Amino acid sequence: MEQKQIHRTSIGGQAIIEGVMMRGVETCGVAVRNPEGEIVTKTEPVPTITKKYRILRLPILRGIVNLVETMRFGYKTLMYSAEIAGVEETEEEPGKFEKWLTRVFGDKLMTVLGVVASVLAVCLALFLFMFLPSFLVKLVGGGLPGAVKSILEGLVKIAVFVLYLYLVSRMKDIQRVFEYHGAEHKTIFCYENGEELTVENVRKFQRFHPRCGTSFLLIVLIISILVSSVVTWDVLWMRVLIKIASLPLVVGISYEIIKYAGRHDNPLTFVLSRPGLWLQRLTTREPDDSQLEVAITSLKLVLTGNPEDDKW
Image (cartoon, rainbow, N blue to C red; front, side):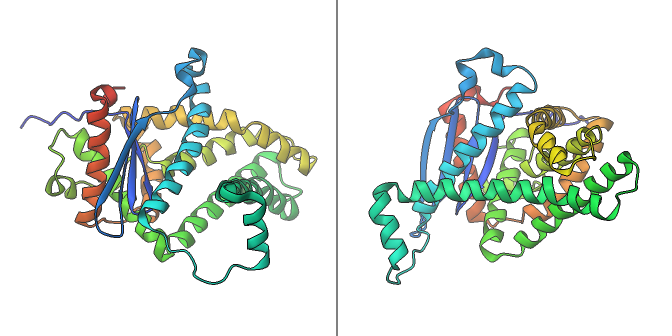
């Protein structure tokens, strides 16, 4: 029996509130189900600085640029989906502080709050994955060799990461987003297998994909363990600063690994992909047919907007 040829695509996506965003080379498609049950869509060009500066397309550099642009555009899309999905606002009378914020920032209040929330999220991530593991290992294993301490530090990082994902996955609202995450993966798999994008076809595919952001973050943690193994343990704050400074390099290397794993099937990519696929059992859930319909709509927007988006 002839084995079916799988078509590798560069299209990726993101689960948002009651919807899915699909991103191709040139076009981004967003589909969100509103409170009336209708699917609201929009397309726009993919915002990337690499079109202007070719040097940023080089390996390592392109991974750093991709992460920054993905985070910025992903946040913008998330806010759009919240607006369309009709996320409930409290009907309570705003307090004095809220009134003061509204008076000072006016229409820009949500943007300001979003920036503050992003900064706090970055600070929390740096604390959990940069400072805390180093502090704990130095506290309890000060006399151990540097290589051993680096391994222990890496294990603490991974444990914190898995625990965080587990706790988040228990939240009811997040579970809904994770269902759309599963719908995104299943839809891309259906397209890569050359089948028509229908709910019936998409439903039968698995929800775990090697190019998922969950897999990327895990690879970042693993690469950071290797990089951190050559960083001094003598002064804690110096170690943390050096690790933060080396983060762009870690991100760039991780991007190349996840990109390679998404394009090839061999024993190496099998090993590289397994841990991330296991973790996707926490960050994805089986979607229902209405969620699959949204994901299919989003992907079709990308393919219609630019048929060349499916090429590496």
